[in-house]
Image 1 (cartoon, rainbow over the protein chains, first blue to last red):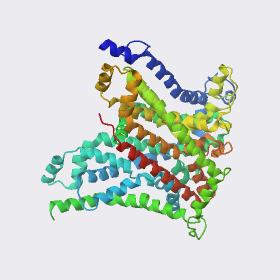
Image 2 (cartoon, rainbow over the protein chains, first blue to last red):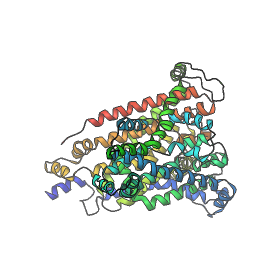
Image 3 (cartoon, each protein chain N blue to C red):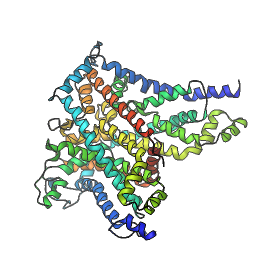
Length: 285
Length: 299
């Protein structure tokens, strides 16, 4: 039977070996090249001298780091970096606490109005950001929040998705553990922070990573709420800079490289958690 | 106070800030968006009078006009959905099945395919602009190696929409692959073995086991990608010259129209009406998803 199933499953390439069919590796390899080439092109262009940009050649003849010096010293990139870092950190810190609290209450407490509160939060998931940017803008300018960090981050200080993920995580914490802490006279806030929270750290880490990524890359709302160059976040700054740069593609690609590399470094180090987190949230939704 | 009542009080204390947040930042603005869509709303004007469904009537009138930019926006958005979603899903499923069939280097392949997904849409768009450049862009250099004349891609009205779609598909591919891969790994190997014993060929296995058992995953991804294409904005703004959705409005989208009308022309009533329509489309798709997933396949 083994030989029959082999013949049927692995096709004409070759019989199933320990590592799998060769054709799969070849096709995946070609795909991987397609995924990587834009980044390769970005990097090589950022190392080109301006005189080489409009020449039909793949690689820089004399690689130079001049573009990087220029972008880092003569533009507002350092400010935009800082603004993005602050915005993503503030929102992630807030999400880490409030999404956890919300998830915890819905997983472990019974109270009048629970169903309505739950449905309210669930319903907000249906409404796309694009529908809210006009009201947010009117509200933010009304209370002078335009061009401030709080103005950039306020829509994402608590997220429904994160709260639901945390709820699922808290559901797996045994009630007996919390009740034991109650009998010991621990107050509810202490039970939450010291007993329940430490048991859901993997889920919390996933929520935080996605939130940080999402805020770091956020575009439409920061674009609307910032109008001054100094208050822009990295994506808004990069778009603004690139539009101004005209045909200085060496500088544009340097900006793109600078705004991608930190994130990609984080991703490569945390790829396992990130990819598992994606698979997890995907399966649960 | 009884222990039970004490816990109820604690629940309310815990939920105080989150509930206030969802009311003020999500639910309130949702109602406000409907309200704005019923007004002639210029944020600079003192009076923002109610005009009934005038904004909706104007949006529909503009959609009916074959040359109007709003018509183009809705038309293009639909094209992105219809072209992009099937391509993205079939590519992702193919790649996920290939990855599922190999034993070595699976992790490295997953990481590589996922990289574009964690990159900002703005950076991705500008890099692809460089790749698409006429004459000296990477793609035209490669075409040149095969003696194919330089293409204008984003600058050619006949190629622009597909060129934009390709970027979005490329960027989102890794996400769909990961979800498919998780779905594939959840299918018990015994199903395939049993079918092989019964003499089923590869296509039969694919059509009778993989696809039906993957149905919830396929529906989930189809809905997610459809919604993502409906909301397309950052890619188009950064792939087109001055973010105008050109050439000749061939790439513009609904959200780009919302942005231009609402924040460029300060015609917020009209823009809000378009967002309400967008919301309605997303609702319809979510309901369809709900119906489709209810139809579970049992073995």
